Structure formats: structure tokens, C-alpha cells
Length: 395
Image: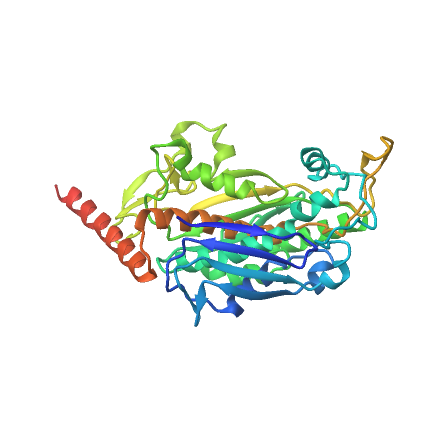
């Protein structure tokens, strides 16, 4: 099965990611990986670090002559700021120049200090930082590349920033470039200016904003996931992966929250026959309320999840009360560099996490040590779905 591990701190020399379980033959171009990382730095409201941060890559293992070998893939993302932090973040024995003892509300600082018996919040924040998601995006690149071989494509777009909600439609795979061209990665051009104005207003007051991203997977085959065990249900796997993104506080599949107040007669997706729809074996859903998941399995309809991010907890101006753990006195939290909002970038990370979940389930279902075998098994499964459905209808 597909799994990955990341390592490294926000201001350390590098981040590392090891991806295990990829079949051989996936096309890899360093420029394409770098482009995916550049997408993560997109978005109006990002902090100054995004303007000078360079994600220099080193492919350490598992790739030769532009293709995966079937062995673990190891990649390092070098930190261009490392020279400024060598002393403070040194692995050699020593002491910090300045301990951070006023933990920030809403961050991992205090709970992490208590859990690991630290007296310096930097020991926590360096790993808890969302900088770690750069390594996830790299892993997601490989998952997306594998999924693309069976026609699965993933796109995200911002549907809310602060109080401003998008009123537009849902992008398809062909619209991803257009979404990325938007300063806030919003598919609805009529809402873009209002979102930017909302960010400017929060920035002027030194405050922060959260929001919601919708991430959609197209071309997903029927039957990924399972209904037979709680820990195989794709709803749970996907929700867990998306909830693991820093500052994410809620995940919704399809129309999940709205369905809680609807009657069953309007909440479900009617089934119809369309012999041209190969993905679903000739069966289609007339609506997409379920978000492409039924009984813990993909239905062949687009897979849709909404991911809600809270306002970032490091603020430039408003005071957040805390306690100095060294003295016990009331004080205000320390400040690190921060974004006004990271919602547009979060969409790129959500794409990566959805891709990693789907790629793992696709490998579980179709197997294969090489891409050729993986694709062949998938194509045979889809063809059998279609022939079985046709035979059933003829009877």
C-alpha cells in the first residue's frame, strides 16, 4: 500500500519526504514537482515568506531517468533561509538564544510543551508549522501522477473567505489553470474582488481570516473504499486526511451539513442508465448530493469535499492573552511571521491529501508493481463493470 512520511522543521535545513508503495514507471520531471510546490505559495494574503521562499528540490532516491523505480522515493526540499537559522536550529548541543515562553492561543504551542515537557515553544512550533505541508504536496504530486494514468483528475477552488462566499459554479479539470490565475484561487470571477477586499480589511487591522475550499476528484472509478469495516470506509479516510491539514477544523462530504435538515425525498441521488458513462459501468446519478460516496465507497460520480480552515492564530496587531509559562504571569502571545489568510494555498494541500487517499485505495483495488500493470488491471475492471451492467439490463 501507499504510505509516506515527512520530516523536518520549519526553519531547519530542509524538509524530507519518503513515499513507499509507488509502482515503477511513473513519469517524474523535477520541474513539474517544483511547479506543484509553487502552486502552494499562491494566494492573496500570504505573508512575506512566500515571496522569497524558494523550494529547491533534491531527488535522493527511487527515481532514475525520469521515472519511478518501484523502490521508495525520497525527496529533500531545501530551506533557502537556513543560513539565518543555523545557530538557533542547530542539532548540536547548546541553548537557544531566546526561549519562547508565551504560547500562542489557537496553536499547538502550549499543549505540545506540556506533552513533551518542553520549556520553549519553538520546540513545538517548528514541526507543527504548516511549512510541513510542502512535503505533503510533493507526495501528492506522485499520487496525482499515478491517478492520472487511469483518468482521475483533482481540482480545488476557494468558495469562501471570511464572510464572502462564491456564487459561481464548480470548475472541471480543464479549469484548474484558470483557478490558479485568480489571486484567491476562486473560480467565480464576480466574487474575487470582494474576497480580496475582505483580506485587505483584515490586513489593515492586523487580523486574520479563515475560509472554505472545495476539492473535487473527477473520473474516480466505482468501488474505491469499502463498506465492510469502519476503517476502510473512504468517507472516514478522506475526512481524516483533510482534517490533518494544519488549521482545518471541519470537512464536509457532498451536501453533508445541509442534508441534516432535509427530508430523504430530496437528499438522495436518483440512479439512471447512461450506456456512454464508462466510469460508472453505465449507471449515473442525476444529482451529486452524496459527493460521490455511498456506503463508504466511490459511486463513480465526482468526489466532492469541502474543507474549512479557521482564521490563523498568529496575529499582527490584536492582542491575544496568554500566560508566560516561565513566570506564571499573564502576558500576550509572541508573534511569528504569518499570513492574513492561507485558504487559497490550503486548496492545493487538500488536493494532495485527497490524491494520496485515492491513490492508496486505487492501488489496494487494482494492484500492480508497474504502472502498465496497474492501468491494465483498472481497465479490465472498468470493462467488466460495463459488460456486467449490459448483461443485467438485457436480462
